[in-house]
Image 1 (cartoon, rainbow, N blue to C red):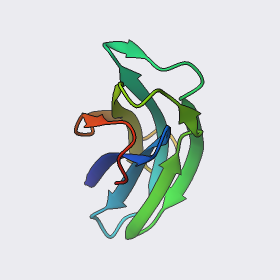
Image 2: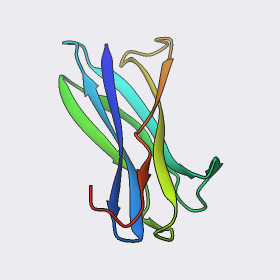
Image 3: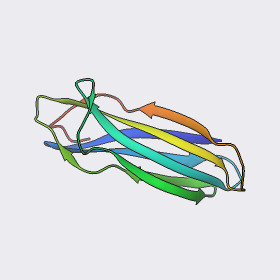
Image 4: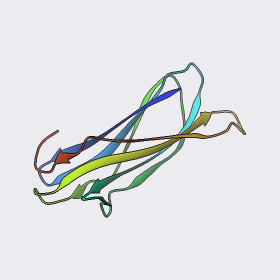
Length: 109
């Protein structure tokens, strides 16, 4: 029903996690996404955000986490958890989660 793609946008010592949600059906879906980042096995402070439930037709939408800063010596990895269901009331919610590739800070992706 959906495809999720997670990435970490890095520019120098600044980064943010991003999740792109694509609806692959011809039905309207209710979608909610949480995105955050990890570094050295721990969640990065102030890297998380939630995008509220929204109706998504055929196509894509994105949820952007806040911009945060880490030193050039750190690695960073984006993570997202997405809840989705048919847009009608009482439709059961399914969840998917995914990680981005781990990248070194101070590169541009």
